[in-house]
Amino acid sequence: MAKIAEAEARTFRNIFVCRKCKHKMRASSLKVAQGKVTCRNCKATVLRPLRKRG
Image (cartoon, rainbow, N blue to C red):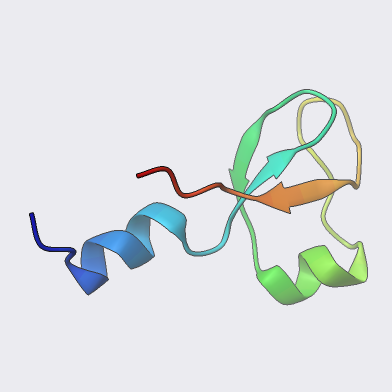
């Protein structure tokens, strides 16, 4: 099956996962790198990008 660029961008771009509670959220990668984004669930600032499986 072919990868569609638009669908892959919607699925993986600007989505981050909290390292403490595993909550997913959409945020700008620049703000995450600067530490300005916090988890809505547990208020942690440690986030990682969503992992691509496949």
